[in-house]
Structures are given as structure tokens and as C-alpha cells.
Image 1 (cartoon, rainbow, N blue to C red):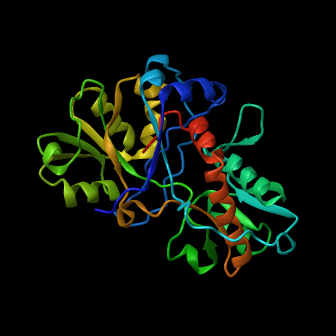
Image 2 (cartoon, helix red, strand yellow; image 1 turned 135 degrees about the vertical axis):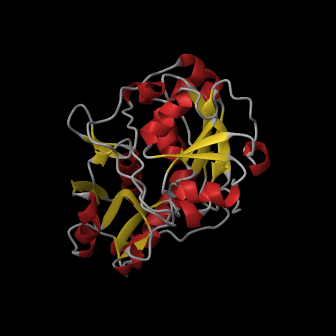
Length: 320
């Protein structure tokens, strides 16, 4: 089992006071798991049509649940500041507008989301102007490859296929798997031994099912055709646990569809051969100058606390 990334645990009191404005503005979506095969490094699913569910702000949950902020940067490594003369004056990003809370059109008609705010922070760190254009997810790579944008930030993961035309920054967000149980669930650890006596829901024919069958094969694994069915089984008490994409489940836990039924149990599972390497910024293949500049900016954003602020704003129920 691969070790998880280092984490920063944020006390609940700080999150409640400093992130209240962000919580009030947050738009969340339940992202449908649509993978049809248990393959490694699969692209995280795009959200279901129809828009995000309303946000439920539960003061009791916010007051007692700490948020763990992941860290993907080695702060002891000093990256060289990029030469501003070699960077474009305007950094054109391409993204999509249908992937809340990462990149989507908000209630005022503006492009918004975690990825958008992170891109703006990258531009600010590099002292360049930011601009955005949107495209269908399937066309994002072509927009960069054809030179119509310098970079893509759209929930992209580096795969052998995408590396054919793109280069990628270091990851800025992982896509861990998590267990969820009902609030009365007493399980503290999610080791194979502890889970062995449990009934576990999972979406069939996904990397998450493959992982369970590889490492939790003594548990009573209950495959469901889609995430909604698995969630309903958990709410109804037909299973003890649900195993799936941590980001998707965090959004569900913080939305109305969960009816405040459940909570995360145990910690994250980060094995990249099952759950991918996480999200990165993509640039045109061979554009090492911009790729190194983005890596520099991302590390500085972490060191200055900007990344933590953005994570707490957009993910009040953390997925690590």
C-alpha cells in the first residue's frame, strides 16, 4: 500500500470562522461514477446533468469535524523562480463549465470553482494576466495542442494517452478513495481485518470494486449498478459501508441528498494504480518553461497558505 501524502489538519474553529463566507457561496455537485471497467489511472467521472444539489450547512457537523488539507509539495526543495521574460504576458487557460465545484458557471453566470481560483492564484504568483475559455472535456487537450490556450486546468489526469500531446505539472489534488458509513457506525479503522465482517457497497465494474476484491476480499462486497443505488442502500441500512471516490462522496455528504445520514470512516486510500495520480495542470508537450513555472507557482501557493484557504472554501467536508 502506498503511503498517503502529508496532511495539514485544520481545527474546526478556524474553518468555521474564516470560511463562512465561502460556505455561503459554495455550489456543490454529486459527481456520478461512470467508469465501466476496473482500470488504473481512469479519468474521474464528469458530473450528472441537471446541476448541483443545494448546499446544506449543518452547524453541528461543521463545528466538530476537522478538515485535513493534503500537501503534495516538498517545502524543503527550492524551485528556481522562472524568468518572467520567457513567460507569456497573458496565460490563457482552457477548462470546462460542467464540473462543479471545480469549474462551472455559477448563479451569476460567471465561471467559478476551485480550479478557476487556483488558476488565478497561479497567474498572480507569476505576475501574468489570466484569461479563460471553455470547451467540451473531450476537446480540452486539442485546444492546448493547437496553441489556442497555453494551459488546461479541468480535472485532468496524466495518462499514457494524454501524455502523447501534453506535459503535466506536478499534481495539485489527489483523487483518493474513502469508506463512508452511517453516523452510528462505530468502526474506527478501515483495515482489511476490521472491514472483514462488514457489508460494503461499491459501484460495479470500477477501480473501487477492483480494489476491494484485491485487498478487502473477506468483506461482503455488494456491487451496485450506479452510485445513487449504492448511496440509497447505505442510507437504508442494507449495507454497513460504501466505498468510492472521496471527492464525490464528500460532495454527497455535504449536500441535501445524503440527508445528514453518514460520515467518512477511516482514512484515504491513495494507490495510484487504482485511483490515478490526481489532477495536474496540462501544457503543450515540450513547453518545459511554462511547466516549471506552474510547478514553482503551485509550491509558492502552498507555502503562502493560499492553497489551504481555497481547499477550505470549496471543500468544507474534506476528502482526506
